[in-house]
Length: 181
Image (cartoon, rainbow, N blue to C red; front, side, top):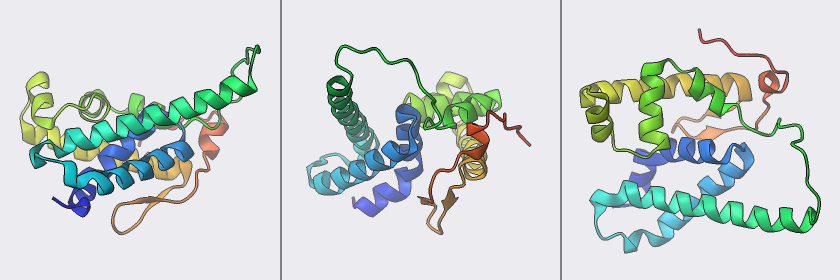
């Protein structure tokens, strides 16, 4: 198995998983990049290619934990003895609201597969639907999420489906609720 194959199969899934956990686009991009660097560097240690997905997600979880550990050290030093109230949370991504606003049939599948890390076949069993139906719902949900992320945050996807651009959550920062078309 090669890094490119893991990228082709998991890049969207890993990015959305990281974004959901981090709730910050800049930090998510850093963690996402670090995750794939570690995947590439440690690919030779993967003994069973059937477990590549679980292995990649574990690397992502570890990178998320590392990020929060580093961040906690800086916050502790700068806020010693002070309790800071929640400030403007404009830096938080609107991605949570996108997932929460998905129609229930899509939200359930996205939460099971991308957030809880279940395999699609396990999600099909849990939801009592066919694997093909799960795949179709995931595909449709990803299309909706990509569209909303692009509209709101002004991100774009290149020819390989990679997320590019800079965040500019104009609609989120103004408190405007986005409507599903």
